[in-house]
Length: 230
Image (cartoon, rainbow, N blue to C red; front, side, top):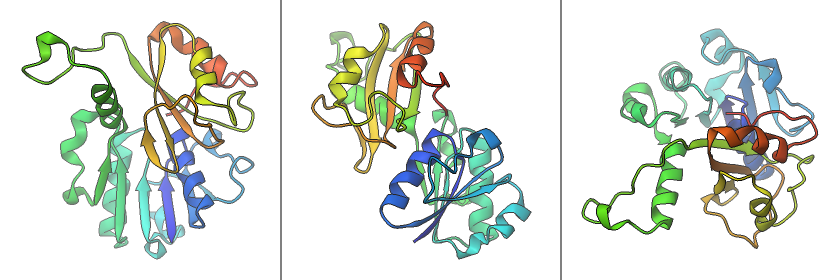
């Protein structure tokens, strides 16, 4: 299949890695030159442009693609890309990433979205499914809130000290106030498994206290110290 992905952050690149590895023709579109990593993903085509502009999508011949994935960290961008892909180019399947769960109601066929995926919702479901309910919440079947926790994610690159190692090695090295809650790979989103091997291209997702984010960033990629991308 021919698949176009709008947004070359960690999520978009991770999806591109998996799809290209499975033999699909993949195009990544992003207007931020810092997101373009031709050397990281040589098997993927790149287009440096604004995916919200109709002219960009025309240049990309979006109508020739089987699937469009709107995977940016901005819900407004993902909605615009989805609408253009469906209404202007008649793409058969449009998949959109939801960043803010409060916006879920917008991601439907009226905006051209065939399938909407919410990483925060998926992670919350994993956490709620793996933690026993407290007595005070037994009647409602919900968990107490997690005050001060933020979601952080990062794609494992070849330079990562944890690529090729067991997940237990990563969890043992995590700074205080950080927990590994999910790994996104070829099998989709899955909870941590200590004996499973982490691979280049996997997206690792954490719940972290704000004060621990800096130490987490340095741990994941000490070579360049860049922050995990959205």
